[in-house]
Image (cartoon, rainbow, N blue to C red):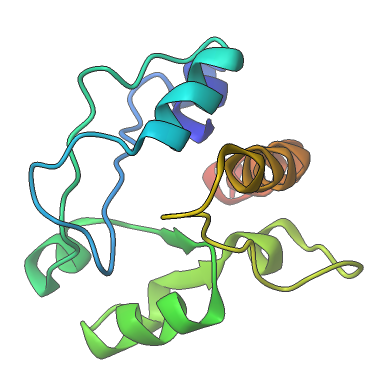
Length: 135
């Protein structure tokens, strides 16, 4: 979602967005729920492959946004404490849940709820990224 949103903004044409999981199985395709919900939103995850977040990857990136506080702690354990936040905190969300529940292993309705929550945060995430780039 974030990659698709940033691709529409000329300010971010040289920005890379990647996905890595704190419990991912390297090389696994997107889960069926993720794949179906992405298609419903016009995104194709057919070529997506999971990647495990490693200390080396943490060091290579500027910002890490997570879905949950537990993932923030895992990123901190990997050396990225100063560059990570939950996506809700980064977006400045003050109302609602602090975590976006990870739907992995659940039914498609959980994936839809997670996608809706993430989509609702995207404008604020992009606005903050813009402010940080313009500084």
